[in-house]
Length: 213
Image (cartoon, rainbow, N blue to C red):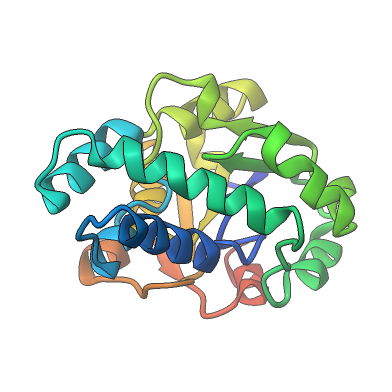
């Protein structure tokens, strides 16, 4: 099917923010004296809270560890953002400019809320490139469940096969794939596994997504 909409994940695809989330998850756990390793933290990217809670509580061998660490992580992130801002991922602005006049809709589909991230998009000068913003807060379940992508397709009144998602994380790829959306993975903190390669195309940088439009 012809691609009629491009659905962009935000953190790790548009914003170079995942490294900060990783840093503050690890720092928060360390401050609380809880054993949380990097491989566990990487599983939390774009992850529904019910799944993330189970992952962290089991890793820390403590019920409630996820909520404690997450609360501290949010404070650390807020302090960081009071003095710093996220950068764009390399090539993003050039890519958005190249596709600007294409007859496809451009939509953010993210685990973040508009209140959290729209100001960052505006300050970086790219807010005008997107037609709408869809958050997992609008659906029952987050990624890797397909809910948010199915919701985005319904909102656009498009068949999932008419949409292409750009994702960086395994949970994001699984979410879009499960919804029937075409997926291109642009890896950020981790590369694609054999399982993920069966679900998506892989581009080493966002400019190469042009090959799959």
